[in-house]
Image (cartoon, rainbow, N blue to C red; front, side):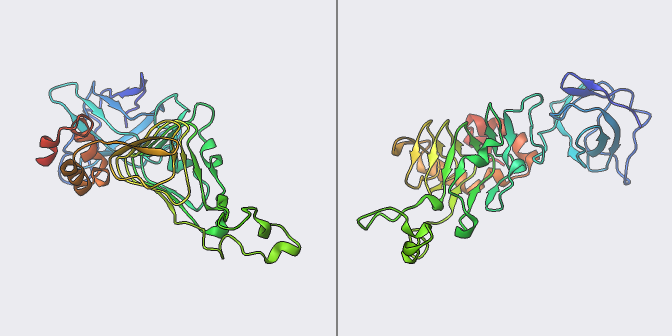
Length: 291
């Protein structure tokens, strides 16, 4: 097997033509040849490459080992660059950047669920995320569920159901929480003030220092302005902001929103997403309709 050394944040493939090993009867659909550059998003030394008939390859090397990464054919002609989107199981997908993480890989609490490729930014420590999910007690069984491809800004806080107090009586003080003579006072659970799970859709952008209250549902593609306090559900592809947060405008017309909800691009394969990423980010709906 050929040895592949680091080449800027990428890997240059040397003299592989005589050493290619294929599995199966057919040659791979994507060929990596001498002089090509492979971007895999992490610095490590590759020690082995094995090609497969599907155009994928396996590699082994120092650091984390990813069993398989698919090489995407980008452009044409010789000396092509094979771009591979970062593996969703990697904690830090951008080389030398410890301020941005794929969030699901640092979650330790069983009642927090995060989808692939959702990231959290924190210039101090990305592990602060769980510290900012407050009043989250397992006994209440409420969950924080975050979809795929969300972008969560520094200081975002999620207030969960454990922070709720009854306020329809003359006092909001939680007497039941303390042992002793007042322990017979009805609890928050028995009073029925525990709300539903907190649900964040897919491709949601939550701005700096925002706060999400218990039981809130935020739809796909919504944008939460910096320092917002979200007290009500947010419809898909809606921009909100303020304290309390209010709707600023819809991102698109209803027909476009319906189309985006129908195709659910975040559920495509990562190969299909990266292939059409330009159309997704520029809003080229005509080309997306041709898929």
